[in-house]
Length: 158
Image (tube, rainbow, N blue to C red; front, side, top):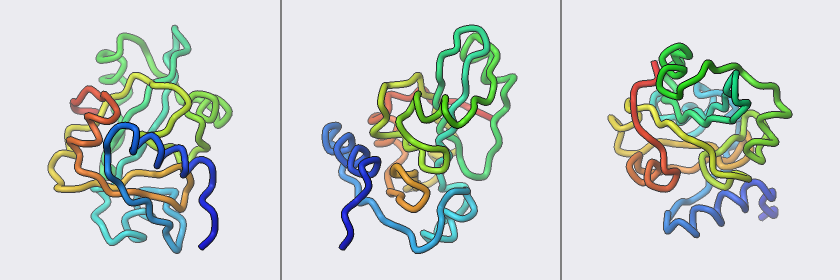
């Protein structure tokens, strides 16, 4: 068995440090998009957690939005919730803010703790799947456990 990439090891270590028992799976195909991830693990698209990073237009702060794969972010509503307009950052900003490349951004194991908002629609599922550091590594988790591990606030993001 091949050695896991450092990003995957960080996700596993963070989960363990938080008492979260996860099993990281390497998919046979890319899980870069919600549809690809759902196909790869045999889940519904809504069960896929998209870990999306936005930048505050005024502050420059990074925000992490954990969004159901079936939903799109309402940026205007999020701006009201977060207190500033949001913009989509470039890949370098995402990597600096999270320690992960786009396509593998995980809600766990990031380089710093970000203000995090979790889509309330994820709670309709017994378990959800999130990226584990690369576009081919994912983990399954109970939504409430993910919220607790990330310190996310919960609300509508669409």
